Image (cartoon, rainbow, N blue to C red; front, side, top):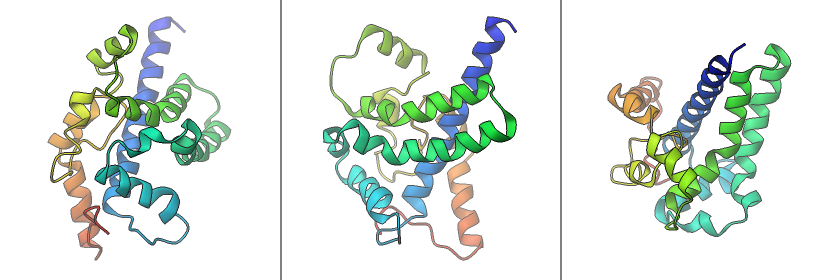
Length: 180
């Protein structure tokens, strides 16, 4: 297998992680509610706090702000590895999943970035601050993916999130607007 094939597979895995981050983020914002059994304190309430105060999670330890994401990554990655075996796509997805919250943190930090990280942001392989700020603008109904700058324009143009909300309404659920 040549290096370009491996790089393409790693990139595909990275984009899978970005899409899954967007889906999880949309579920947190639109489906889950404060007071949900088992997950309110660990997932819903920190998400609501982040939308009220986008800087709040910057003051947590790396473990505190990543633990639920890393748990979700392992819950997906281990069965995937067991069923399908190792692949470069799997490795790219795991790497992206493990990095996604720290990439998100860097979109909220007002610090000088290293030149290599700025280069990754400039090409969109990791999300830029300019791109992510669009999610925090009212009505916060777009740009759910938080790993790259690449998928959000496509998913937003396809109106994926609005279609998912209509799907919720079709089955009798009212989308949560991040206020409950």
